Image (cartoon, rainbow, N blue to C red; front, side):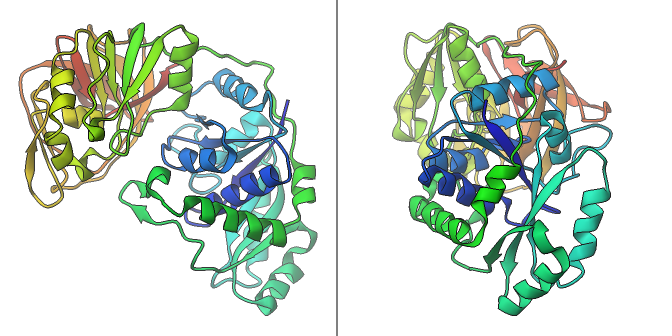
Length: 425
């Protein structure tokens, strides 16, 4: 079983992804078998991990998943790896109100040590108080070392080392070239970044040169996986056609792999390339993604839309997929595009509002699933109108407060803004 280490930070924007990518590729370049995971509900960062390692990256979610599910996924990642590097989410102790869900919670579940990445801009000796506070704040969270990011100069580095001493495992200088472009839902997707391989190799070279890789390997711990559970949500069908391209990229690998292990036959198609779903599929899955950025192209994808409308079995859409199943989608310029027209809903990206949070979902009759589910919502689009159709889920937020019902169902066509993660346990 592989060792593990968690890359965390005091806050978002500290450079966790840069450090993680650099470590992943640097260790791989050494000849190690390197796997990775991402804490919490994130579709974008894991694809960068996969580019760095050549292996699948799983999301480990301490709010949505039981400890046994996390252990099971970790066991799968580490079975043929030497080390698993887990990238945290937000700040180390940040999570949903009223329950576990932070990077610290995940590190505690795995009993894995933490490498704390700190953005050192505009900071001198006060870094000692910061590290002291994070180290002592919560018993059971083991910060095994510190990586200093965006250090300005040799003098700045010496000042920080005087305070932190042997806890410093690496120092990365500020470099404007090591910035990954972003958009409204996070980083620009890995598949869209034409310079990604060069970026990862540059990050790896910097990490190899400026960190003590042997000490990082030495502090990595053996994660706990004794209570491993490897079950997954039942597949949508026996033969599932899954949309996959830049507009439909938000699908969790642990769900897809779980369906495959349950015996489902999976095929993939690109709506942006005007490919229809397989005609013999008994279920079609439209994941979330960025349809709002490709609305015109999707509206003119006649083979895709015709194949979708003529599907014989269940058709299920999440978030962006739900928007495409609707009547119209208005893009950021205010142009309205005709979508599949399979659900009576119209959405708009011109009228933007952030919708963000965990969701506990209770399926209505006719849903693909019959048990309570854990999921999340993250989008900027708004509902312009909804017509007559059955509801798909009752919903609560992370602390159990009721929310309006989510999603619509018309016969075998259904969808909602919720991204399903796993069964609620």
